[in-house]
Image (cartoon, helix red, strand yellow):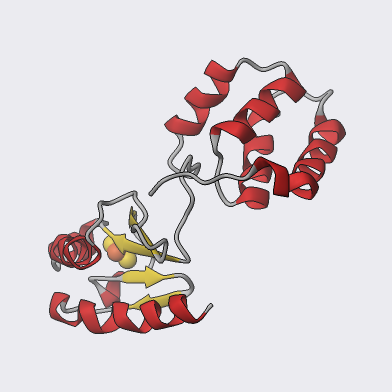
Length: 167
Ligand code: FES
């Protein structure tokens, strides 16, 4: 999915980020906090936002980019309207969660860690979600689905496609 980050319409968001940076600027080890805050504000961390943080903190772009791409909780691409997480923890894996994930990838025509062309779904593989009794488990936003049969994936996704279109 292409980035269509529009710098000019984000004045309030950049101001909020700048206020946050100013409030913690003098403390040490602030980069992770700033990146979390920025991702909360913008939803992801495009290069424009990384550059802004670099200018405001004097932390080199290379260091910021290195941190953003190292930690999986940060994303340089926009997330979809709905986040699908498939648990690849041991209990789920044994019960076939890889087949669930493969089916989702096939149905959405995208890859793990990426967002569909239409911007509706982002696919993520997760660690144990703490409900192994329901293995294999997947989440879509706040909804939890247990004991999933890959054959039911198209029906489940359809529900969210409709929600995605109506927003
Ligand atoms: S291994 Fe999937 S919920 Fe625990």
